[in-house]
Image (cartoon, rainbow, N blue to C red; front, top):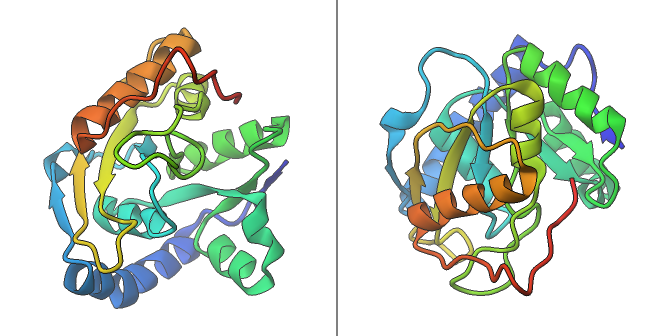
Length: 214
């Protein structure tokens, strides 16, 4: 199940993003959360789309990454967020699209293909949900590697530290673009290693944490 509109990923949606980023997110995160960013030179300048892959600590993460990356990003949003009418309308206007994490359907795949064809990047969290163990990444999802391979676009790893703390400080480290391997089971751990290096968070336990489906 996915929710997107064919006319949604245009200049108007991007304009909404710019307004919210510059009037709200930049003052809030740089001033009150003491946001520091490293590796901005790794953000592509050629306007080609890519997969934005952060680790996930809190609800602050999508706006933080959108503020830092400064490229049009369509975030995958869990279906639970769409149960709140005002929130559903707001995030939809800012380019998010609905995904059922338990049943990623053909319409979700179609949505990502369409979004990337419009030169928008797609935001996919490594774990698919917030990490629940302090100091450790959550179990890596197959999603980012799968969508990257499906659309032949690279992944931009973005490590976030401190977004789960009231008023931070927040540190964001941006890694270099990379293409994951074709074997998704290997690729998801490759993705986790990239974010472990950027964040300093420990890797999940491979022996005790089974793969998360697409």
